[in-house]
Length: 333
Image (cartoon, rainbow, N blue to C red):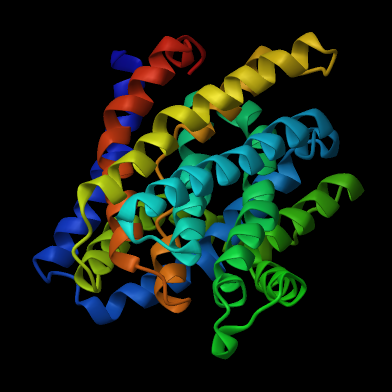
C-alpha cells in the first residue's frame, strides 16, 4: 500500500490544490476556462500524441479490449438510466436529460485528465494501450450516446420546441465528438508509430514541453473545474439523487469490467492479466470533471452532475488506492 499511496497521493493532492486555489480566489474564476482550454487543446493532445507515437501500433487498439470496455460502457449507461428513471417514477423528478448525464458520469471516468498519467505512473508504458482504448471508447461511444439521449428528451416528452429525433441527436453528438482534439492526437500518434516517424528537433521539443505540462496542470484544473461547477449549480440536489450514481461509478463499473473481462477471457478472447487490471482501474477512476461543463451547456441539472463528480472524486482517493493495492498494482509499479 505505501507504494500505491506514494503515487496516488500527489495526484489527488494536486486536485485539492486546484480546488483550494479557486475557492480562496488565489486563482480567479475567469482564469479557469483558459486553464481548461490549455489542457484540452494543447498539453493533453501533445501527451497523447507522444504516448501513441512511442507505442507499437498493434497495442494501441486491441479489439478484445475494445469489445470488453465498450460492452461495459453500454451496460453502465443502460443500467444507470434505468435505475434513475425507476426512481423518477417514484417522485425523484429526474427526467431523461438528467438521467443521460448521470449515466455519462457513471460510465465515463476521468481518463484523460487523471487516468492516463496515473495508470502510466502505476504500470509504466504497458498501460498506454489499454488506456487509449478506454479513452477512445468513452470519447466516441459513451459521450456520443449519452449526449444524444439527453437531446432526445424534448422529442420523447412531446415538447415541440425541443423536438430532437434520435437520428438528429446522434448526428449532433458525433460532430461534437469529432471536434474533440484528443482522439485526433491519438490517431496522429498512431500514424507516426505505424510509419516509424519522428518529429523534427525543435518541433519535437515543443511537443515534449507541452506534454510534460499536461499532468500537473490537468490535475490542478480538475480541482478548479469542480469548484466552479459547485458555484454555478442552479439547484440544491438531494443526496439520494447523486450519491448512488457516484457509487455506481466507483464500484459497479469496475466490478462489471472485471466480470466481463474474465468471461471474455474464458470465452477465448486474448486479454492479459495486466491489460484487464488496467481496464478495471480505469473504470474505478472518478467521473470525468468536464461533464459538468457539458451539463451546463445542454441545460441539464449541473448541480446534480457536479455533486456526482465531487462525491466520486472524494471517495476515489480511498477506493481507487485500495483497489489498486488489492489488484497488486504496487508490485508492478
